[in-house]
Image (cartoon, rainbow, N blue to C red; front, side):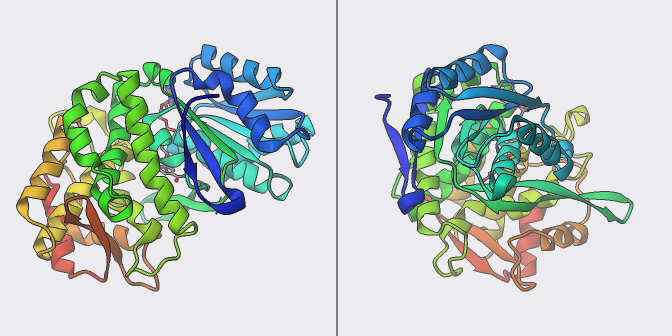
Length: 392
Ligand SMILES: NC(=O)c1ccc[n+]([C@@H]2O[C@H](COP(=O)([O-])OP(=O)(O)OC[C@H]3O[C@@H](n4cnc5c(N)ncnc54)[C@H](O)[C@@H]3O)[C@@H](O)[C@H]2O)c1
């Protein structure tokens, strides 16, 4: 229990994010400390691709702390991140007869965390949730901040359209425990995808906490790519500290554009969401078989587009854009892709993004040196310059 934690300061809903090597074995005692003596059971939602040894470590820890642990699992894809999957998990949870004080525990990537969080937010009108993230992206981003939810499939021209995270709820976890040892089995492409969110944090860090994460990433890129446990622990802690401060200042993302707040975390995402659900886009223009894009790859492209948009508006100089591009490239992330539809279609897709308020597009744009700001209704020609910058 001596591993230092990052605190998400949200008053009586505040919680610790514990990051380190071997921390999964301490989840039971941490949850007991957070919830007190009343709870007697725990329902663990497991990512089907997390090796069984980690599942056993977690359930063993919960059992030792007096939580009779039961599990359910699913193989996560954006297609199955739906109300139907949440309902199936809710039915399994209801079958255990778990009480209002008993926690749901998520062991998995961002999809499992979002679905389990949504289940916890809605079962018996809300039960505690514990996040045990197992991907880089889930550790540095999805497990912290309380956003939960599922995608919605709606009829659209030419077939069904997936509206990402359209249904959900804010439901803060009571504890987050990230064990970097679990990353050993994560496929390389997913490690790199998660690093895109770290670059995003580096691009807003100075606005939020004064951390120079950009220089740290440039210096430690090789250790990070090698999944050195010490480097991963440091990176996850630094990244979570930035996210935690943004969340603490603006929990429900309601701060005005002039302040920025939690919305700054959407840097690159409005551009990214417009291309993430296009089925035929590959991160490697020379290898179409790698389509579709992963979330983090779309974010990486979104960061490049945001830089080009900012540059057109005169908000940043070329040196910062070059640094961002170079770092993304070094981390094995795409900076341009082939086969994107025309700007008209992409602009329309950006208009569907949840960050549009009252029909006005709000983009988070970099200002250089780890700073960013929200820009309302940016000049469409600058947005198009952003889109053009990511065409291979
Ligand atoms: N709630 C939030 O604030 C928030 C923030 C960012 C992203 N998200 C959501 O997160 C999701 C993306 O999360 P992700 O990138 O973690 O993807 P993911 O959940 O799809 O996981 C990626 C893949 O890795 C597998 N996996 C997970 N851990 C593993 C491990 N340790 N070893 C081997 N395989 C493992 C998963 O089964 C999956 O196949 C998106 O749905 C996105 O909307 C949520």
